[in-house]
Amino acid sequence: MTQFNFGTIVASTKSGSGLAADLNAWRDALHTGHKGPARPTYKVAGLSWINDAAAPWVDYVYDGVGDALRGFIDPSTHRYSTAGNFAKTITSGGVTARLADWGTLFNLSGSAAQTVAIDPKSSLLAGWWIRVIAQNIAVTINPFGAETVDGLAQIILPSGSSITVFYDGTNFWTDANGGGASAFPVGGVVYVPASAPPAGFLRMNGALISRETYAGLWGFAQASSNITPTDAEWLEGRFSPGDGATTFRLPDARGNFIRPWDNARGVDPSRALGTLQASALATHGHTGWTGGGGYHNHSAYGGTDAQGNHQHLIGGDFRGSGVSSNGGYLVNGGTNVGTSWAGTHQHNVSGGYTSIVDHHTHAVGISDYAGAAETRPRNIALLACIKY
Image 1 (tube, rainbow, N blue to C red):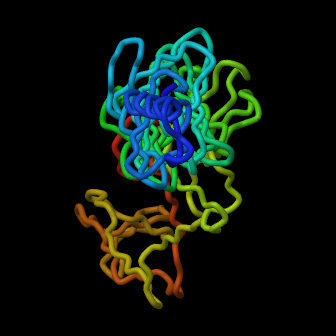
Image 2: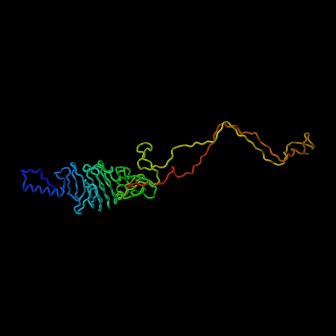
């Protein structure tokens, strides 16, 4: 016997062998640290006791309201570990994490996926935490009832990953999303100036990936409201269920600009989450004209070309010969007379004008601009990555 309560010793009713037996039982309780499967009924504030219901034994101090965890005792290896420094290896069947598991490292392995369930928050204390390693299998972190961890009903760890779950007195968080204040959340997107993604990220390239290997991201995809019913219906901005059994498909951000979803604001209406929008120019027109003027005309100036030394013939009916009364020459028996020879010369034309025209315009043709195959702003190319 370890724990023992002999109540108040009344000398008139207990003495001799009866008293000796009670004192011996109490001595054994002290010597074994009040070890037993539950807190002793004779508890008082400051009582130290050991819960030996299962290995490892758990070392508590009762503080008058509840039990404060001090550490763990492994009776097989004869090792004592303070809270936060104990490991449990689980090869099948899963495990439930309790207050006594404060600071425990759960190392899960085996041939089939396992679950780490968590006791209700009401049974835990602020500051409680555990570490879970999914050694070679997928592991589900499953809080109690409707409680959540990182705001999710459950978290699925892919094989080869690990996570810390801690309780802040109100909610459960993990070091993958320390209450929104630490590491990048699963499903988040970053752009990096590199050809390969950083650790914990995948290229956002529309690839089919394993549901088991990337179980956390698969869980995010299922809860995203942005997954197509079948892979045949997949769109670049959405997830798909892949082959429907072992794979799922990522969104593909390659070569696309990102536009935040309108979500009923009305700036970019009638858009569904994850849909692709083709390039476009807003409806517009072009106006062109020539320089104008009021009423005006156009002057004309010029000259005839030079024809060399020549004369011009004059038609007529003349008889006889001799000199005419005006000094010209008559041609015997001819009918034509000629002017005198004037040498090489030309005749100028000047002072002419076109007709007056009212205000008017002239049609202007605009040729196509030899641009690129798309409309785009100045930009740089970065690698789009998604957290798994």
